[in-house]
Image 1 (cartoon, one colour):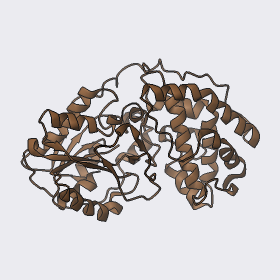
Image 2 (cartoon, rainbow over the protein chains, first blue to last red):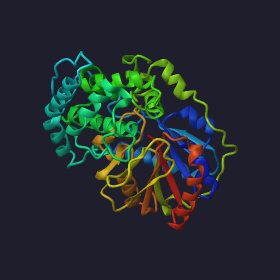
Image 3 (cartoon, helix red, strand yellow):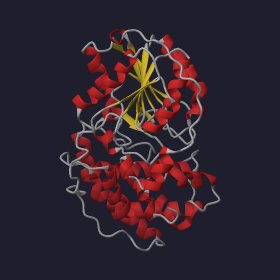
Image 4 (cartoon, each protein chain N blue to C red):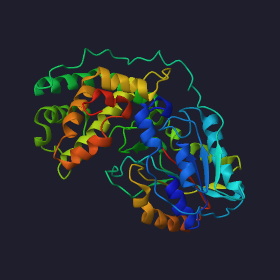
Length: 250
Length: 153
């Protein structure tokens, strides 16, 4: 982000930016930066807090009135809700324990289909409460079309053929994995009163669902795979850092 | 990812202390008075219109987000699993503050909102984006943009 500021300003465009990692702004020294103490992924602080968001944006914009730089300022307040006790959250659906036998392709497929089916009303409810908005749809596949591919990836690993023409299996997997995670998470946060952190959702998705277990299983072999596409994704783009203790390679 | 303070120590240290490219001296352009500036947003959250192609590993290009697009139809195809997305699911403005920018224009804090906004996908190193970013500056000038707000994710 700070790097882009250098390029754009160098070409004559005044820039100001929000910095989620203060140390990076200190080192890269973009012309103007507002360091914020928020969770990564939430540069404006928190959802559905328009007054707070506007204050962050205005503070950032007002750096354009500085007479010289680099100008690095700090936003003084934590995000609303950052200090609330988050023990209360639970997914609306209680699943049975994740599948233990990772060698039964049919069982994995059926269990994933069942999870998707149990979550469906909550996914739809969640979508409705946001006026039909969803992040689902990156892969171009319906949720029900995904489990057989994932079950095959667990059992047959990189020998599994890509189910999408003109898209290599690793990329097809990545897009479907992201889509299913969006689906699960949007369903899980359906109740609008629920304040929930990424860590709590992660602990549920990666610790309590068969999808989480399947994704960990795929990451475990992908880390050792000769297939460069799977290997590259496995390193950084399969399992969040706060859930990697569940994986073989950490 | 969760808040930095909730990350496992070694991963937090690796993120904060990662090797960063050298950029040399900080460039500086004196902008117009803020209340006259036409402002564009540039995100690195891997945002795009639902109908646009998703970002893929190594993408250094950007997607255009026109001001008349229904922002509730924006989707995020950033590759990283390491930041919170639930805030974005609940409210686009958590990472793409288009409505807030429009309000600040209505209030007269800024001059106006640009007709086009942009998103890169920040998993790609910024050095790889350099030629595209420099070229984007020309597009911004042609669109009479006076200043940009860069928003990470």
